[in-house]
Amino acid sequence: MGDEGGSLHVSNDSNGLDHDNGDQSRILDIYPLSSYYFSSKEALPIKDESVADRLQRMKSNYAAYGLRTCVEAVILVELFKHPHILLLQVRNCMFKLPGGRLRPGESEIDGLKRKLSRKLCVNPDADGIPWEECTKLFIVRLPDCRKFVAPKNLKLLAIPLCQINKNQETYGPVISGVPEMLSKFTINIIED
Image 1 (cartoon, helix red, strand yellow):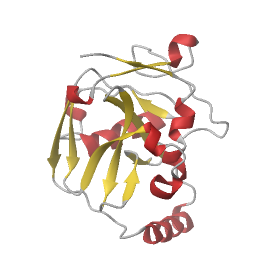
Image 2 (cartoon, rainbow, N blue to C red):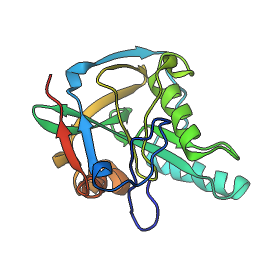
Image 3 (cartoon, rainbow, N blue to C red):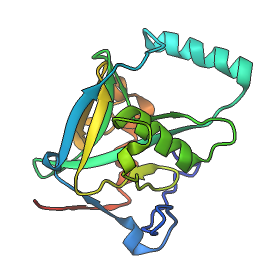
Image 4 (tube, helix red, strand yellow):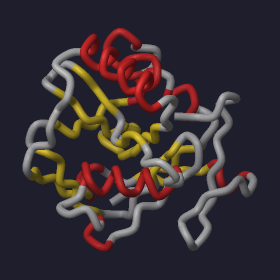
């Protein structure tokens, strides 16, 4: 979710690749949740019944394949004049950032785009709409509108940052640490 030092790098290059470019890179424009459209599609298979099952599967995968890199997206929207993060909820009990494991030899950015398209678009080619991203803590910059299509067995929820902050019991250590990392940015709420 971030590099070991917790540094964040952002820019607005036309090719969508993000690098540190000073103060301008520390401004995040977020748009109202009402600018986005939400729908559902066929359910994705869920491999784990519980957190314990997930840990066991991760241990088995590590034994078989070694260390694998995962990428996850932080997607921010505005609701009631406050920033909210979009999270996937699994079985009404577990929260996840959209993303997943990289394929062998796949770049972080390509893998993140593939995972977002698979989980949040009608078809895997992202409906022709490019994702814009930031490196390491992948803050996905949304256009002013877009359609999200989540699998029927996952809920895409907008959770206020203040509810997530330091709430490890509900959201786990990675997600509950996102608000602290975002504190390095200026969040600019775009009005309708």
